[in-house]
Amino acid sequence: MEEQYAIRIKDISKMYKLYPGNKARFRDTFGLSFGKTLYTPHYALNNVSLDIKKGETVGIIGTNGSGKSTLLKIITGVLNATSGEVEVNGRISALLELGAGFNMEYNGIDNIYLNGTMTGFSKQEIDKRLPEILDFAGIGDYVYQPVKTYSSGMFVRLAFALAINIDPEILIVDEALSVGDVFFQSKCYHKFEEFKEAGKTIIFVSHDLSSVAKYCDRVMVLNKGVKLEEGTAIDMIDVYKQVLVGQYSDQGFGESSFAAASGGDINRETLEYGSRKAEIKEVFITDEHGLKTNGIIKGTDFTVHMAVHFNESISKPIFAFSIKDVKGTEITGTNTMIERAFDKDVKAGTDVEIAFTQEASLQGGEYLLSFGVTGFIIEDFTVYHRLYNALGLTIISDRNTVGYYDMNSRIEVKVD
Image (cartoon, rainbow, N blue to C red; front, side, top):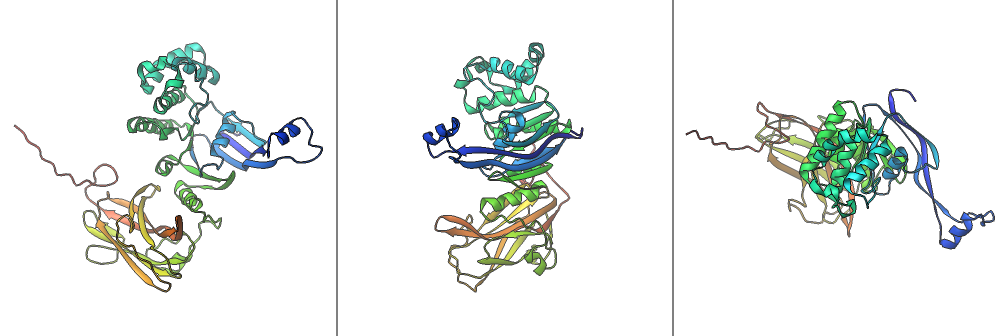
């Protein structure tokens, strides 16, 4: 393996045999199939390839059953691939699903030594790291109880404390941080940032798209065992959102028909999709004076406008917009259903104009606006038209506070 790579995954497949019953399984196991195929092949992974450089934080996202956890288990050696190759250059520490690598009958201390030994540490090395592990876990005397008695939060505290304190070169985290209180999650993400600054390699699997956008240098999207695409976090999150509503297209991120027909400050690479029963024809921003602009002064009112044409009659459509930062973290947004602003059917051929007015409380900086027309057909959520990152928004400010938005605090200080 070239030294610049921490992990190289080449054409990995994992196939399971699905039998119609135990009789067929028995016959196949003992060679009594007489040339017949008695099972249906199911590919948890199908020819997946991915190169991860040293020091990268790479996210893997996809719906449940897409093959994310299977891939991580193959990388860590918990599972064998049916075909393909995996090369690993560095010591791996992994947080897979709760229970992986732990003996449920052992207490916390015993499991620390068990896992540390399996990772290649001597008892003396684990002795040296034990105080840091216990301090980070913060579960007190429960560490002397069998882990089968732990809550999920206690379990993940111990598992994460162990994983990050055995000095791994490659850290793999699979959804584990969705468990535990907000204080522990903050502690873990702080460690993430320390690991990134130290040049460690991280593979991060999560449904928390904001965290994926914030921490990942690159993201791969899996769906039903197949690699769809890999690229920047912001682009791949948009791909994943298409997958969620069953409207993924592999046409890439070229210029959209909406952008081609629009002018002004429209993003020429706006990603769009949907059934087009309703189409967003125009989007723009106006300031407090009603002037079209993409630059808004912090603290003033501004309005986000949408113009939608209905090609077919639609029952109670929902109009929405959202705001992201340039890394793709979704910061805020709203829609007409949440605001209880519109609850009517719209006939084919109708043009509708929507205006969202609000105060610009965001910190000064650059943002991206996305738009959507959605709704429900019976109980099924459907997308008629979505535009991702269609407009840029600049908030102009000479006073920024901490975080994403200004709480407009009123401060009183008394001195005796």
